[in-house]
Image 1 (spheres, helix red, strand yellow):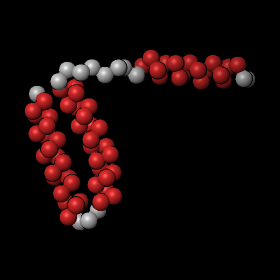
Image 2 (cartoon, one colour):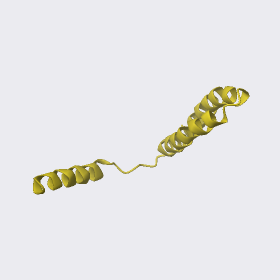
Image 3 (spheres, helix red, strand yellow):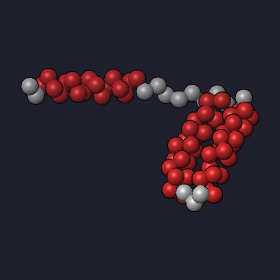
Length: 74
């Protein structure tokens, strides 16, 4: 499965980055890579079986903190 992820991301990278480089739009390439590389790394890790922590606990604590502060200060 990870070979498929590498192949697809390589194809998308070539299709998207090469025209930008030929047009001289280096800032756009940097912005594209800013999102593309983390997406590739996460997809690759998921394809080899790495599990990421779920964000629901942190979101719950943030919401509880906001609600708690609003109730106390009113």
